[in-house]
Figure 1: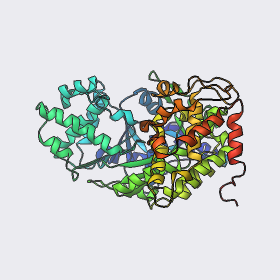
Figure 2 (figure 1 turned 45 degrees about the horizontal axis):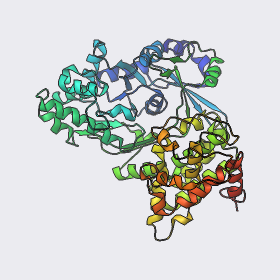
Figure 3 (figure 1 turned 180 degrees about the vertical axis):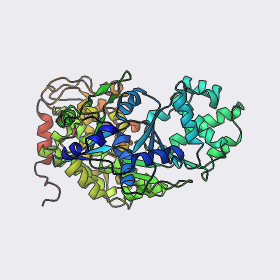
Figure 4 (figure 1 turned 135 degrees about the vertical axis):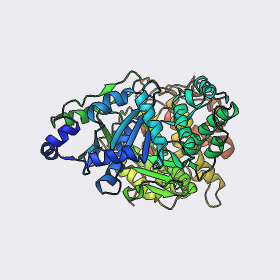
Length: 546
């Protein structure tokens, strides 16, 4: 068998016998309808898109609730389209890796066009211009990563390739964003047609990042008379162009060798993983967890597909913000960082293996349930306690999800202020709680200081994960060793005052002494990390047990 439309028709019985869920709609009818009246175009043809948005569209097509498919566009790594999409007629396999050790295999066929965002590929670019001139188009969605929206450096100076596009105007853009906004200008010229520009990247207030980039281009073009003055007005008119906020949550690691081997046992040829020249790992299959969330601000001037029927939540902007804060500040990200720090110190290579350690499981339960939930931002549409239940019971322990503490430990200095600092602030501002009620969040912060020593609990050196403030933070723990009986902890004070890293001045808020005491205990010798966890957690009951 092969992953092609011809093989799906000829070998349908064999695919079904091998346990695959197949597309259940008339492909040719959907393809023709999409060509004539496209509704949904997506920029960023990577794994999360194929595992999430494309699967949602397929569910609607299978139910007869949509009659047009997706148009996938790649503007960064063209080899994704050339080597993974087109050889397989835009089909892919979604391997949903469930925590009960089963795998659900689905052939995703909702992508009926794949296009490369490159002016040199004239047929593709002209088709994209045609799509953006169509009145039927309701939304353009994005998964291009947070850095994909950058138009300026840290000092606010336009990036060189963005500056070149400002000068070139809509007809001559070469950057990813420049070409996207040139297409949006085509829509403006076609009669100021409405559209929602929907970022679904995993970053705070993602719609504002996309809008700011669009306005920067429009301002530059209009100031140079390279675009009509009305284009900027069009972008700023929410009844014409919207930039909704969204919160997305689904883990889709790079193609896993074990999944590849499993699929090959089904006798499907040509499923090899390829590493592109831009170091993108691609394959005709995607492996992903079963849990997923997509919450989007309900701001669609041209309407949207009925995605609410397949689990997407449309709501007010402030609710989207609250859902994100719930996830990032309490229910998921702090637990991940806790496991990352102590996983590296204790020599773990997989997050799921850490959840088999009773002490580490108790640690994340204390960070999430005991210390986080009392001050959680409750959005009302997702129950925070049930969200943590899912994280602790299903998502993090999933043995099929090959995530590592070393990966999650990347950029920890950038994560601490939002993942822990916001909770500390809430305790400090509370009328009923005090920072003295916090014991395990300070332990995680002390664990990070211990992590900066770059020596694990067995006394073996390791290389810390990349972090822009790694070197400047490590200098505060220089001179400390596991052999020292007495440590002058005052040299930590300057670091503990750094609200850029911790979100608060830990000395001012009254937590510095506790963090330093924990650090001293964690660094008291070989094995001290586990001994400290044992002392603090052995008598703490598992969550839900008395």
